[in-house]
Image (cartoon, rainbow, N blue to C red; front, side, top):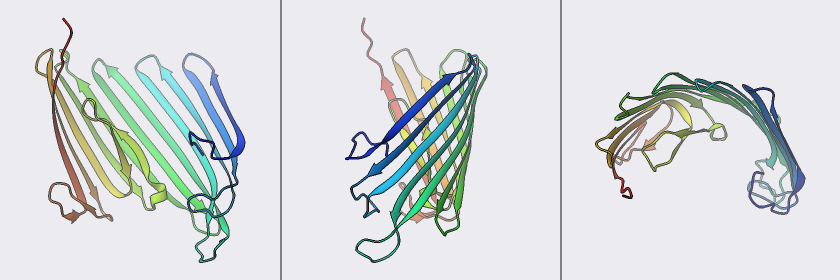
Length: 239
């Protein structure tokens, strides 16, 4: 189950990487496993699978498109009070399309549309989506770098939460968890003051229509969350 330890599992994993030409490549994998031990939310031995395929198309350095499909199947406990409850089969499907376009020097546009569906036996399936548009621009003299993204998401169940890596200030890492229904955006400005000194600013805001969170600024619950980061970097270069 994508763990760095076998955890006493037995199974078969296979992967394939095809490069059809200089522009088009296809990668895929399948992982079928059997876990004889109990695990989280499963009090019985578990059998499951994980499959995926990704198609990647590039046109020089100006265009890159990716299409990804992934399917996961596993078993979990039924909602009963039995000591050894019966298990139910669950499946999760994920479809992602992403396009990165560089029409001119210093300008990059990135678009993503991602769909997710979760299904359980004898229950209606649930679905969610994430869509975002991101633009980044660097001036001709490379003094100022600007990055902006706006996202729209609707994931009614936590199992449908969609993870998306966000751009951040240098030496920082941020990955957003898109859960609930709402919109989010952020703006990043990085300015090179001199060769050894640069400054960065990031402002982000997320709003939900059906979800309440604790705001970091006001320490109060609400349907909006804002964050502001400022950074100054001094680079010590060997002479």
